[in-house]
Image (cartoon, rainbow, N blue to C red; front, side, top):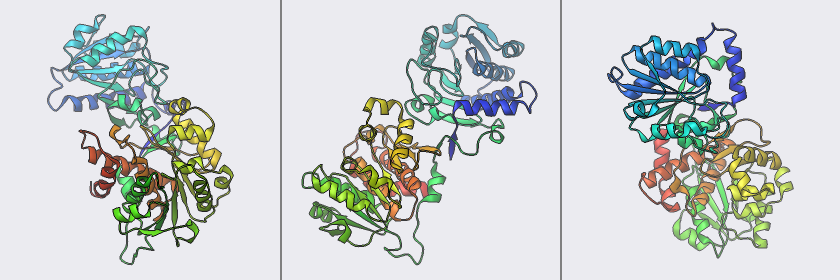
Length: 483
């Protein structure tokens, strides 16, 4: 699992560690890891004679770049430092000159011939985009044929929020130190970071045991997903109830059931007005006219996709919330939600809004939720005492109460922004709830598999439909279990 910590936490941990180390030792550790990563990116045998340009700002990231550049120069690289700050790290400058590197005031000639560019313009304390004088240099670096490597994080992005409020330098790879920074895992900054590499500088001993942000990886999901045992039957594997669809939106029911059937539960009970469409598409589904309380025993409910906004939707949501099993509420169900009914539940509740629905639940505007997504998911989880999965370019999950780490989902594709994909996700997450996963794990594993399935369906080339995402879920399970 990738874990990330806020800037203030990182600074405090670095300060505590530096009291135990000789002066400058921490920067040397970072520079050694950075130089090793650059050697790997240049390729075996290509360091000697390669041309490396260092974009050096006033902060410690500039010092890291200079010391790493000195190591590369000692291995035979031609290294040129471009000073973009009001001052540069003095000892780092001395090191680069002693190793045979040079300092230039004209960056453009060096950038035009560069094989690799180290971006050490700003560090984790940077606010806003690049300063105007750095913008043309950053554009020249990005316009060159060089591999651009960000030092700790791309210059111009916000380390904590992931916001990009001005010009930023997009990297091919980011080498970060000690721990991931939240912005590296959250869009839009995530798109600027490229491939991520974490360098261990000994910070784990002084960091808090609970991170601010975490992101699952294949092995985490594989360990968490349910798997039937020899004695399993369909009821022991869990039964999911789905209350979705209407005469106007029967497809939402079909798609939610599709996600549910591929989510690991042993059986799916459908309740609603789209029974004929559901049974035609998925004959293995157990259908019932309703109400939900008379449909039979379930281990979890999904309610809301395609219900519409009539009084029947509010009644269905209220009845499902009155049950004693985990409940996932999505789409139209969120508009019919009674906050007190959610807060009073003993069993887990999982809410799955997109930004517009989150804004309505919080009484704010959508633009505010898009900008402050991590704050929004925490606020929703605290207000409703529920686990919240906030859909978006980076899907976020937060446990009830709003405390603890926020999980960010690293999988997906922009092609996933298509009608019905959220219905598939709801069914999938609900099925994992019915199979016995906790709400945070069910939500984050579902988002992970959903994103993998979308990548499979798109194959990186073009548009996909929600049905194709559902069809690709089996392959996504296999990718995780047998990478």
